Image 1 (cartoon, rainbow, N blue to C red):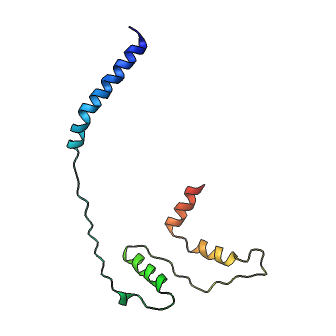
Image 2: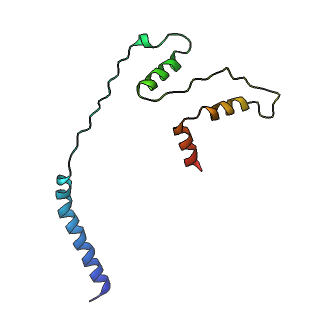
Image 3: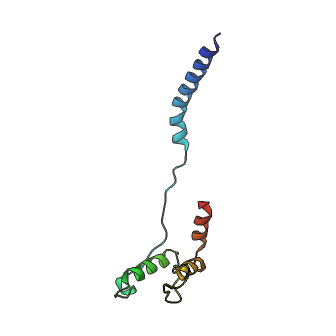
Length: 109
């Protein structure tokens, strides 16, 4: 028998078997219902109105879902006389990195 013909017969038999069985396999899978058990109680009184409302809202909503945003400890300033005037910002970002931030950086390289 020709090897190419045998190969084609096997491929067609596998395709037919998969077509017949795929419906059965899909029906046998357990369908699980997804549920959300976290409730959030939030009103506009929880966020102070002012110039930094957007940031306060972001922090409040993040804290409700377990994402704590580190708060800046001091006011950072650009030093125009330094070799890198933005070094204070870079150092602050490095000091306040979360585990998720570090994991993302590790995946980059």
